[in-house]
Image (tube, rainbow, N blue to C red; front, side):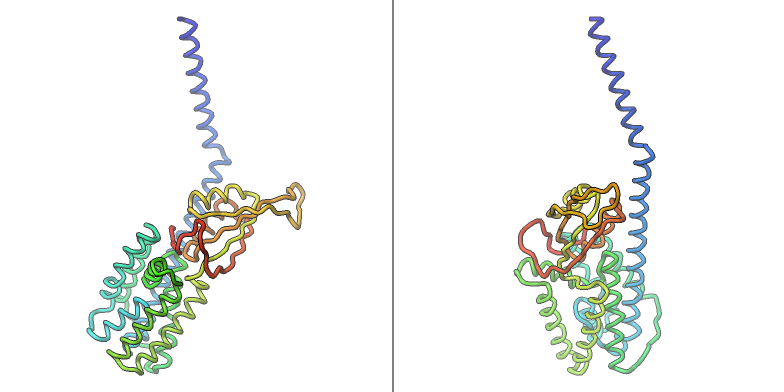
Length: 325
């Protein structure tokens, strides 16, 4: 009996020692430095996103109040619908922006994710408040200049918000949803929506305003494409890093995406480096790109990342253009 008790006491002491060593390992300088580096990257990423969204809000508001509203020009998408209803009914634009985008925020929560919906809701609310309380000068009465530069600032605002991980126009969310249901491309859905909007503008306003509004839309869409390089396209990402296994696990477990691992060889070999290296390839959406870059930077800030446009995909662990950030 005494021998048995002695054995139990000895095992308990050893377990406590192992637990103490494990706790010490958790607070080792290497682990603390890694955690601090990840926290710094996360904080910097969030500050950058907030800055982009704030600039995007003011840019879009300037496009609205400095150009489009006084001339009753419209744009495509949800902003175009808001401007059209404002021109017909004189309902304040800031109320329309929130009311019309609200269903798309809920839809974004369902098909994209919680953080996307939260950031989008805050961005749209910020735009509405900016439109309601911030005064902007009426820049010009020239219709062509209004159409071009109104679209430019509005498109820049939408694009910067997307780069920050949110949207201030719910058209993309609706297009993602409909493309999944109808089996067509997002570009086709957006074109169809805008055809309906501009047809309504020609009927309720005038053909001249509708034609100038098309110029506004083209200006906004080209500006948006320039800033985010095609939101409605998949992106193939090739990653070369010494920490390939950690990055592979992150993509699978945290982002929920599939990966393909190629066996490769280094072209330039530094002293102490291995010749063989694993090359990771994954396909994500433009809306997920911001988060992927942030997660890779946490693991290996010096990773070599190559991004290329993918027209479309079928099968695999591909989510239909979401953002979980």
